[in-house]
Amino acid sequence: MSAAEHLPAHQALVREAGGVRLRLRPTHPPAPGELLVATQVAGLCGTDIQMLRGLRDDPAPVIGHEGIAHVVAAGAGVPDAFRPGTPVVVNPTHRTDPSFLLGHNVDGLLQERTRIPATAVRNGLVVPLDRSPDAVLGTLIEPLAAVLYALTLLATARPRTLVVYGDGTIGQLAVRAARRRLGAGVRVLLVHHTPAGLEWSARHPVPGVRSLLAGERGEVPPGGGERGETAPLGGEPVAALLATPRDGTLDALGSALRLGGGELTVDLFGGLPPGAASPLLPGVDLAAVRSANCAGEPVPAAFTQVTTAQGRRVRLTGHRGVGNGHLAEAAAELCRAPATYRDLVTHVVGLPEAARIMNDLSVDRKRTVAGSRLIKLAVRLAPVPPSPLETQ
Image (cartoon, rainbow, N blue to C red; front, side):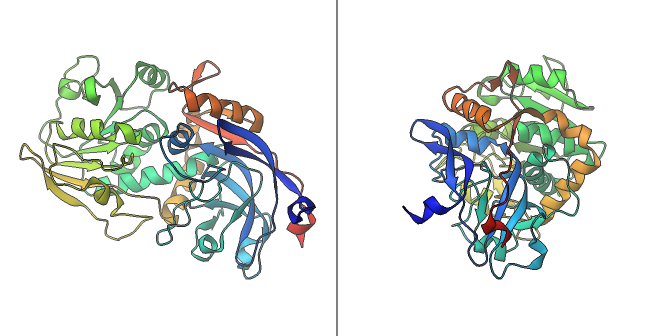
């Protein structure tokens, strides 16, 4: 009998050849410097779906980096602030250690127990929550933190118009948070890439946000209007947030670069495929532009001034990960205005149903689950009782 067979076990959604399976995994005690946490509710994000579809080669068998957990055991040398029962959120991106990217190259939160490596604990990536939203809304803390980071970058341009490309979780969060970060007078356009997304937004309107359906290659209709209406952007500053899947980023970028208006600032939020380049921006290393800001640093943030093939001057920026301050700010925002964001968690399920949904999403590009559009999937994990190794 192996040593692992003597350990207690927990349930996990494990990626295996051909799909996702609900499996029992041994619950290893935390080593010195490590934490063992129990996920309450975890979210499924766009990059998770890309991994399920084979569009990314991240190796972690267990994905998931969004959600609230609580500490169940701490290894030797872990600060007393992480006593058992402490609610925490884990910052998935390590600014200096590429070996830690939660749910990508390190097993994530879609399991009842997750060991957080010492490098993440030591560098402050496990953030205790003094005040947190309910666990289901907790699945929005990390994506909202990323949106707040992006809006902070764009706010430096003092835009009068914000154009958000993408109608998934990030795009919907962005239009809900935009005025609080950019000012009550900012004009907000949400560009959808499917009629289904446009119809969902029509049923879940956000005050002051104009929704429209992109044309071919993601183009905004002439004038930026909805269903043919005229809505000129004028000569005032414009910001564009590209919240598309990474295989749609270049089309969205091309559309953004053709926007009217005055000074243009673009945030490459959605990531980029390997070797991505735009003929409209000859010689520009887009991946380097996006990665120049990481996990809240540097301060002030990095921007790249470029000139398009047509001679227009544009500011580009982007970021990887978030800072702990962004996570705390997002948690506070969800506590302050839960009703503003609650409709984005469209599906709440347990582990067995989550496995079925994840397998369906891996083979079907439509985002329809149980007859309704999926924005955010929240997975409830019923924690197993603490074992002796967790209470020692």
